[in-house]
Length: 125
Image (cartoon, rainbow, N blue to C red; front, side, top):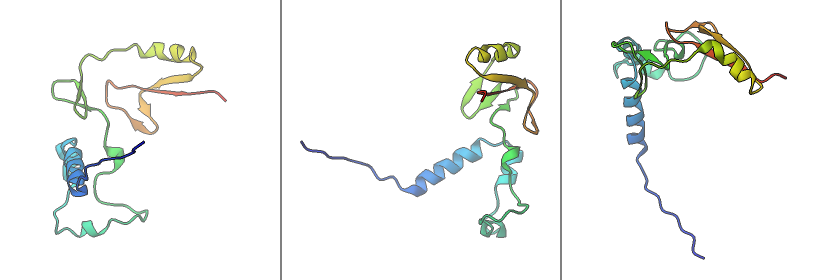
């Protein structure tokens, strides 16, 4: 029996460049202004992790879903038009699966954008 493998080496710089471009393209103009700096900015040397206030775009200011100008919701390249679900019925449906669930208009201390609801569920015990 002959075992072999083949691979194509992809330069990590092109992978990082694509990831960075995808990240920047997913941001609103306001978020992009916070998340980017000029190359000459001293902020580029402040990359280590020491808990302290930092410049930039905090994770808590990034949302997974963004409302577009036409009123639909966007997540990455997905479009969600007329996504309707009776959220009041979800706790009972999830209870049938052995989960305790509740519907909230906030997730933790973060208030969700108008029209989005969070369903938080956990297994008892």
